[in-house]
Length: 241
Image 1 (cartoon, rainbow, N blue to C red):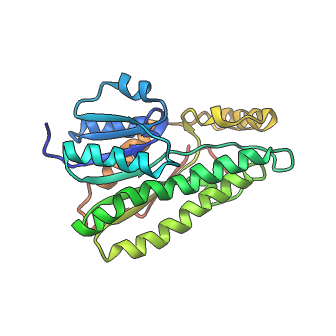
Image 2: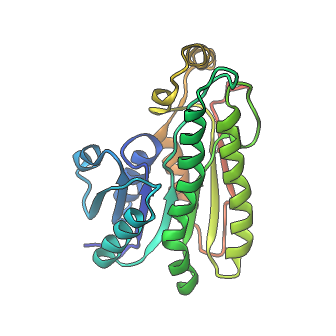
């Protein structure tokens, strides 16, 4: 067991979510890992961890996972609303079903995740919420249209939540990464967009390791509760857009 507070992460089976789970576990925190691929989380073998198969569109599944983890490790002190999907494509040829998927997971899923811990944090007058956005939530790209819309949503909601929750001593941090070495490209089904993305990634010398991003989240979390890093925006040095 550990006396450090519980952290919870959605989309914890890969990428930044996985790296963040590892970073906080190494720092001694119990970790609730939530994702659809439970076997990948279990294979990580983190001590003082709980793995739950969760679809972020199901409030019941998220709430049940949080309740189970809190019964074992105490209240969630940080929630990383990380789960998301990137179906990047030219809007003129993109199937509307891909819009639906991004809007549902990247907006409704984020709100369901925040709601699962928000009231408890408000009652305890402490806690940190980390919201996964993107550089695409700060600027637009022609082949990211709906994806950008969902990430702008995350930014807008985060700004409002930050002001609202500040009266309760709860912190809200927005994470806005550029090109990171993760599985994000697996969500790009449009061949032309995928090829362009890969070409641009090569030009900038590749993406940043997810472990670097996880370290920044951990460092920001470890600040005193009265100090808040409002946004982490990190890109490769050679990323121009």
